[in-house]
Image (cartoon, rainbow over all chains, first blue to last red; front, side, top):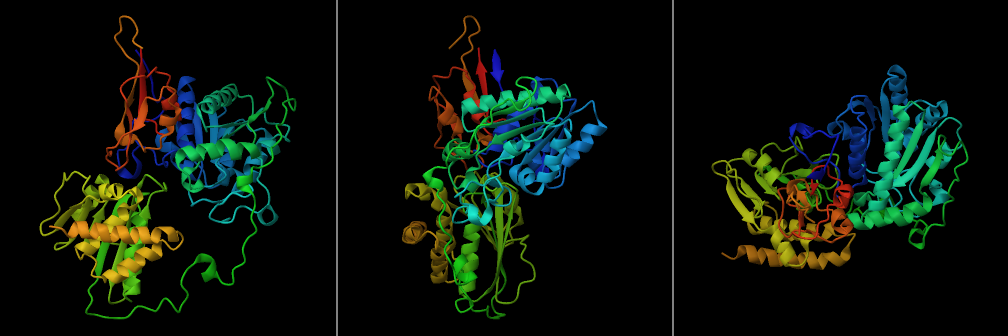
Length: 483
Length: 76
């Protein structure tokens, strides 16, 4: 009997004190696929005891929790500089820098370029997902023309922000590198080609031949704003049109400069650059109410401070639910603060937020002992339920098994929010169901009317969803109020 | 696809709580024998499940999966 399973990784990833076997990457992340291949190649070649990885800043930062080998963490953009030191100090080691496109392509470009030019004996794995992932999807030097990011909301305009940076092509102008290639992890065929290329990178370092650069095109579903399959298609169709795959140089096999440099193709129509609209004011650009619509909070010492905690996994709309309650409080002219807390992952990790509503100015936005706790999954319920204040309310999704009882004097409501949202045909509206539960159980101390206005305001950018969610809110509330 | 004598049939072993439900493996499976389940895992995500027949042990699901321990493929 044979098995195909992960090699070269730790069995447990003790991140944030939790004993998990799950990475911090979002669902469908290219980093995850590459991380597995790197660990597997390192283990299959028997190099784990000789390998020193230099880890980046960016989404790839936590590789030291995953790869069972030696690690050094470098400051942002400095992995190639740190790897220079490591490979010179430890000529017996296999030194591998792992960097992203924000890290290597922008802030650390000169570090990487000069290390390549000097022919330092380390291998650089360069993940290109065409944007800054960890910080929220901003434009990177590798962003495609016309690609929408949070800092190029109308698509990257080359007249304003330049053209995509072709790192492999630029590095191919240097004399020293012995291996330069670009691969992808968009589908099975490409993943297997990627594995062969990673093996080649390790071989070159094992034999201390010189500098090697491997660029890997990786999908970032979260920041592309696509599901994982669409993101892989985008990676294959749009990114490869700009960044053609191929081996640019492998001096042992084809000699310096003999490898044909593939020419980029014309970008497709879906990435056509649109002119940037002109806005009169910042408020107009960001769609926020100006001072007239946002009157200051009123002091009313008779309104006690009420503390909320919302928790679940990223993507369930936990943070938006918190914003809704805070916005309703603002509309009611209460003092209010919203404070999010989440890991480096944007989707799939634990996410929570705190909201404080009060008739008097608020000292701290953090909530250790909430009056109201709303939980959408099991880990968050188990983590926070013991902290709820006496007399408080816990609202938990009915899919969560109650293995731990709330403290005495705390009322527990199990609400089938996820199921109701699915039954209504809008699975993403589970947070709206929770808002309905907050209204039905009178948990917020805020007017129903303001909660509803706040819910509608949260869909300002997707007006077609306003009526739908308002309707869902009413239907869910009616269902919950039935005995 | 059982090998004579061993009695082992190729199949994926899925660790449901490690799955993030991205569906890359479902799309990659050449025999279309994986599907996302209707039940939720511990994180509240619908994980992948094996339909029970058709696996040839090619390992494509494993290589397409971004999670190290979500899928393991056993073959004769």
